[in-house]
Length: 271
Length: 349
Image 1 (cartoon, rainbow over the protein chains, first blue to last red):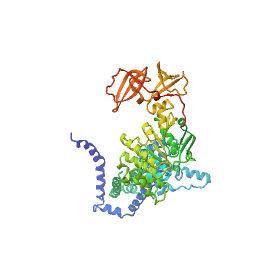
Image 2 (image 1 turned 180 degrees about the horizontal axis):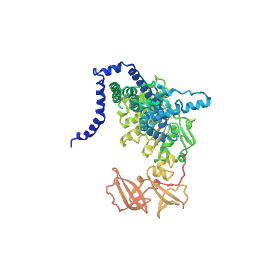
Image 3 (image 1 turned 120 degrees about the horizontal axis):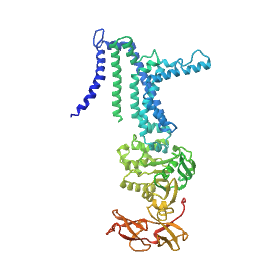
Image 4 (image 1 turned 90 degrees about the vertical axis):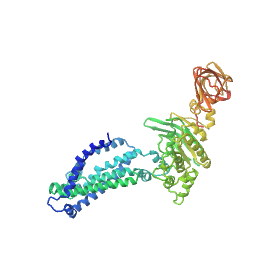
């Protein structure tokens, strides 16, 4: 049997369930329902203030969340991997479980803690007798950022923990013996060897943050409009499918472009 | 010059004691080999000096300084481990410079000291390469250069040749001996399970087993006059035979043997230690007759396993022209001066 035959079933399935609907979205973006030129929807989208704001918000939130996840994830993974404490293994296992949680669940948990009527505000109002508590950031971009960092940090930690488990601990011991303090060991021995894992985790988080919808929706941040929220608004609230598909194509292009960039950089870095 | 002193050092993990009250002194400029099987506590002792394990009892001193509670980066030691542990993302010169930078050596001095260390280990031509571009032997030389670059008073070598093949190992042993001649002030603690490495390189050998020191002395002392059965067996794979001490020697399975009984009391039981290569084939003094159980050809020698009165005796003989067959009756013999009676306790030499 020719080898190519084995590739046929997955290609057919992929084409039916993914490529064909994707092609329909692209086609729709070039077919304005109101008539006009093929690029009218794009021209209208690019010209709109809401799109530019959504694009800006999406990018800064994604970049900010990625940076936050990298910093926090690296620090937490370091502790779990190299600082012996009771329960370190259990925490590492929990990271795996955490990855399976839906994003809205984390947002819901944050709402319980920091929401307008959440525990933190309740505690403050109970203690001070004030009419309302001081925590109102959850419905701002900072709330979205916090939720995204909380939810996506384990996606950075998982590859980092795998990379750390491969690191020869004798290197760390020899470095210490040679006179290096812990900070230098982290900077000059651990970090360079963790770079491929950081790049993998970071790029994954960046792409996921660019496309994140559930967290933004659940925080109820009315003034935070990201590209996925814009698509939702155009398609569901305004029934402007061409514009929604146009924004979606832009969103996909950014994601695929970033992924391509990661692959190129990764190959050059030998990751 | 810095020596090392273990002063009743004990290390335990949970309730499991892995090093039990070690008392041992490495004199300044001395090469001390810690020799023993896996789990004997030798690597733990080295790690206690490096600061990677915290003793539950006792003190570790480097020179006159008690370093027991000091973190590793404050101890000023060089260390070479079995798998080299080079930093893979750094070039050879950066690996060697690492310790100098960590110890904040004057920036202008670093290139010269890196070059000096690489020159000393014959790796100057490879300064710009990455570890992955080097052979195992070259990587080990770089690891040694990295340890020496900081000019340590104490050098810890943890099974440094175990990952090398036999030929490279022999060459590196000679290199290490040369390095020590060039750096006579450096005290070296050399952990190994290979008696050849210990006998070749060490000024003294500390034989370890079951988390403790079993014996300590010069290679010649341990080889020719071991104080314990373990030392006799582990260093040189000696024959150990149960005997009864007699006025002019000992009695083994009813055979009178002539040898120096030292201070052993006649009538007491002891263990006779005789090296396989000191046994001869054929009639002679202290004859032991038995049957051939196995014959091994080892190139320049034959090893015979002979059953003598229910005990298996090993004999290493120059290559035999006529090899005895299994079951043949043969006689082995040894000179009185080549046997030792064991029974002494353990002490730090």
